[in-house]
Length: 79
Ligand SMILES: [Zn+2]
Image (cartoon, rainbow, N blue to C red):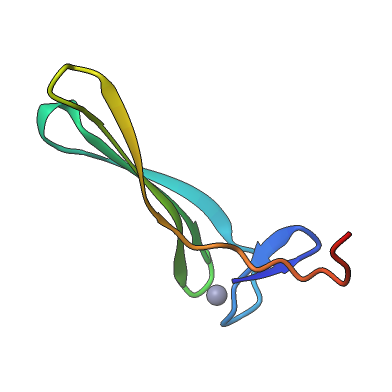
């Protein structure tokens, strides 16, 4: 993943990528929320984060982070 001036650009064609959210509904009210970048030009897609939200046996809401692909930020200095 490439960032230019704070914007994520497509590694294939250099187009600014859109940030999208997709929600899948599972059993017992469970939800899987996918955050991802998508290139509107070539359709290239890169997952950013996947959250799984479900209820445990006691009815408590549990949020699990399934996946996280860190965005590489081009910075010249770190502190
Ligand atoms: Zn592209």
